[in-house]
Image 1 (cartoon, rainbow, N blue to C red):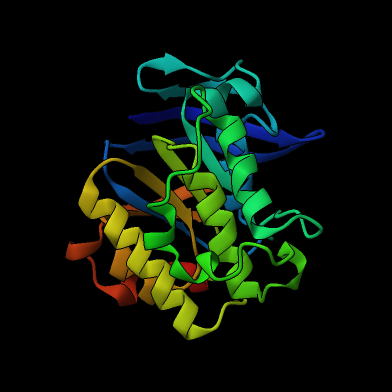
Image 2 (image 1 turned 135 degrees about the vertical axis):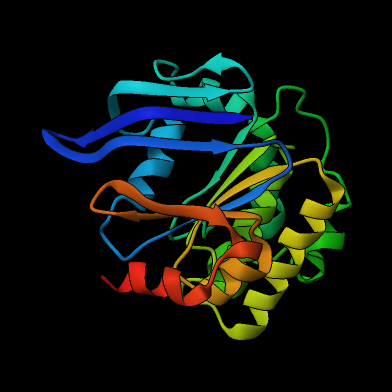
Length: 230
């Protein structure tokens, strides 16, 4: 599904990621952990083609994407929910969802099943995105990415600043999607309990390098915590 080899990434002239190797199989939920500022968001942006990546390989479904523009990566089936959600505050919930279809090769109409995953959105279709709570905006951002039927979904800090009840709703959606086996997810996250609940596999990043990885079912949480706290 996704195979990243020896990837380096830069902001301007600053080297942020150094020889990153990460592999994901179809249907997996993989979480990338680490403290603030270690390069996790840069890694997601690298996959989307939003930062300079002069060295390495990003192979998605057997297609090399390292030189592919961002819009083509989206058309290949990668959905991205950035940190901060990036919804359109002046558009309605429904209009925000419709924009998600623009990334779908086949366009089409909005699939009503999205409201089964996020029932709260169905009650707010005419409300402006900017009038939603932070948790509701996060659900809208994830739903908007999902309506394009991505094969790979990238989520950047989906629990950041979100109340516990909404975190549980997001966890429920991720586990539901995983059980369907139709989507692969790479999640940047710092909330370890959430990671252990939803992820099959994890990587820990520090100073632009992968310093630990493994199956979540086999790991001692204290080992991860020690790596994150360094």
